[in-house]
Length: 186
Image (tube, rainbow, N blue to C red):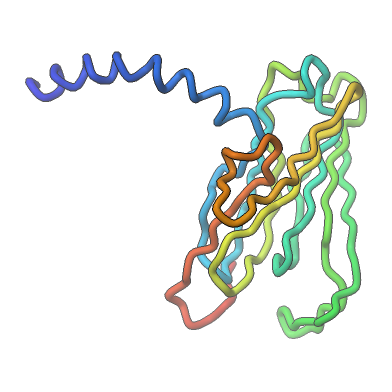
């Protein structure tokens, strides 16, 4: 009880300092889970916390990073989904069949003005995909298109730079080493 009462004033004093940084941390499109195991199935939840200024979000476009396979989008009510595929330079085998083309982009588009994501609201755009078998960092370019303007969250930090150094950073995912011998899971 005494420890709880001692910590409460410190927490209250820290709130204004935290609040000063909160808008910047929420100012771009981010992933809900920013780390995952190599070679596993990953549910990518892209969090969109604002529009383009006062303009609502009409479209969200996500490009697949190199090595991400078999992306499948989750539908959103009131939005259409377009899946762009391309031929692979190196086909791979999945579930006993050879895959010669794969998803390179997923685009969600609001069907009407009433379906657009209001700039004061929060929305999630979700896909599932197989992650590469090697550890490292993936950057997911995301384009947010509005009736008045667009935000291209596509910047990748250079060596020595962090995501917070960039005005329009791509969503980042840290791929951690997997302890499993197999590179496949559901």
